Image (cartoon, rainbow, N blue to C red):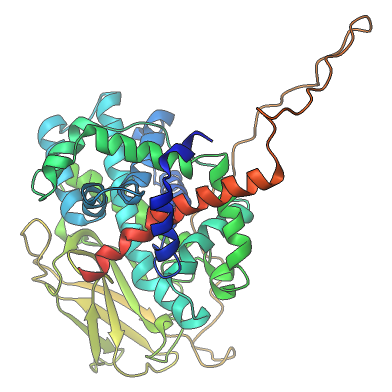
Length: 458
């Protein structure tokens, strides 16, 4: 396999030493597919029309892969470009550059592919924040395992359960990416050769439709018995931060970015999604359960500790809360309302994000944002909690059908078929060699995420 040339014994030794304790929390196949599903669920309008072109759509998938490419056995400079690409300040700079250089119409295919790549990058970062700050906490609470299992596990389940089919194109707008790193201390080392080599490494080792899903499927087999709750709920639309639950906020974030690219984003539309999402109810009244958290997803990042909120019941009585942001600190695309006391089952509450929230671009909000929700009742026969009925969740499109290859070629009766080639020492691949190759490639995949520990100190 050509991608093996990227792996050295020294790097493998480092990976082996660090792999058991360190991993990311959202698999790359998951990023690509959630982004693709979000595009498929965009409402009719300008942005959906932009993505009618398959090349534009695949550029978004390339963007969804991009932030994690910096972690693939790379240098400090590679890790720096990958880490920076995850966060809203990078996206805000990207938006400003694209808007001032190519806006405001984005009529050409080249401009639309660049916009799509930007949105893919942004979707990746948002999904990490959503998954890490909600679903991962609940997985830790219920399965007793964290990132080391959920990242490879959910990617593996995605393949095992028949969802995998999307792979990104090779599109890479390098001329527009490099200026975005000028402010980093490693900027002199972040050049075209570095980024292209990292992207090739990730694509060759994992984000492809050959060895990548094979490795992921093996991880699914390994982790499914260890994280049964995660395996059951990673595609549950009712669980905040699951891959399925990420689809709608990802699509709405793309719409918010489209407005930002046209300089018409209204801060009154700052909250683009919330969990629990109506008509669903808050799943737990116990304030110590992650399932009791209320999460507001934002169309533009808010400064850490730059917001305030209130929580009241249906009579207006205040309920204690702690306002939390993204798990890793820094500018956040979500805020979590964590109650400091148990809720009353069946009661209705309103969480309000107050005006004056400080945003990534230096502006502040001038209006409050409310989210009203009901807590699940303690018993099924409680008349306050009738059945929810059918809920219009996003539609996950099936994989496109492969073209029919047709019948096998007919062999002329007068022509002897070619003999089967006999194995030779130069081309035969033993089962042991195949296993060894998969193990080496698995080390590469582990390395893609091993250094994400750097964000834990943010």
